[in-house]
Structures are given as C-alpha cells and as structure tokens.
Length: 163
Image (cartoon, rainbow, N blue to C red; front, top):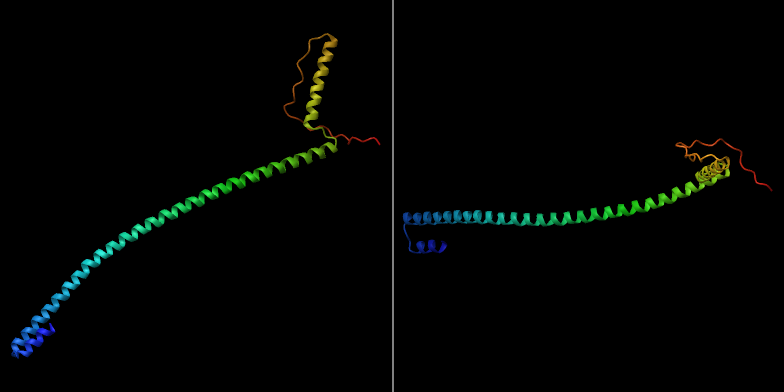
C-alpha cells in the first residue's frame, strides 16, 4: 500500500487523483481489518469449542480416577473395620471367660453351689427316688423335673476346712 502511494506521488498526480488513491487505500485497509476480525472470530470460536471438549474429557478422566480411588479407600476401610471388629470380639470373649471364671471361684469360696453342682444333685435325687420306689415295691414315679426358674439358694455359712 505504501509503495502504491509512493508510485502515485512519483507520477505527480493531482489532488483529486491523490485523494481518490488515499480513499481507495483506506477502504482496502478497512476491508482487510474486517476480514481479519471475521477470521479471528471464526477461528476463535472453533478453538474455544475444542478447548471445551478437551476440558470435558479431562474432567471425566479425573472424575473416573477419583471415584476409583474412593472405591479402593472404602473397600480398605471396610476390611480394616471387619478385622478390628473380629479382633475386638475375640478379646471380648476372652475377657468374658476370665470374668466368669473369677465369679465362679468367688461363689465357690462363699459356698454357693454352681449350676453343675445343682444338676448333679438333681440327678442324684432322681436316682435315689427310683431306688426308694423299687425298694418299696411301687412303680417309679416320674423323675423330678428341673425347676423352670432357679431360685437363689439360702445363704449358708462358708464351708470350713479342717486343719
């Protein structure tokens, strides 16, 4: 464009010709600017859409990886909780057994019969009843049934050991 103007001035054109050339040159610059703007707008939209698609793809991949990691962590935590619960259950059973043994020992020292002792006495009483029935010549009666509700035995003094 500058060269064109230089040629025109070298040809020494008159004022109206010069102003027409300047006007035409300005018109071409204006049209070139509009074309560049249009091209940038068109290409910019395409670039923007491409960037949005790439961003969406990356977001989906990231979200999938995050969900996988959360799933793994949840699974590990569930396994740990199960292990801890199992270990705690075993420890609780041990503690319960120790407690029962100590209570049984304490009750035995106080002279309170255990459930085994009571069951043995009931069996012995049943056997004695059968023997008595046989000796008296009567048919044996039904054996004594275990009481539905066990009542606490009357307090007895502690058994004394002979020295």
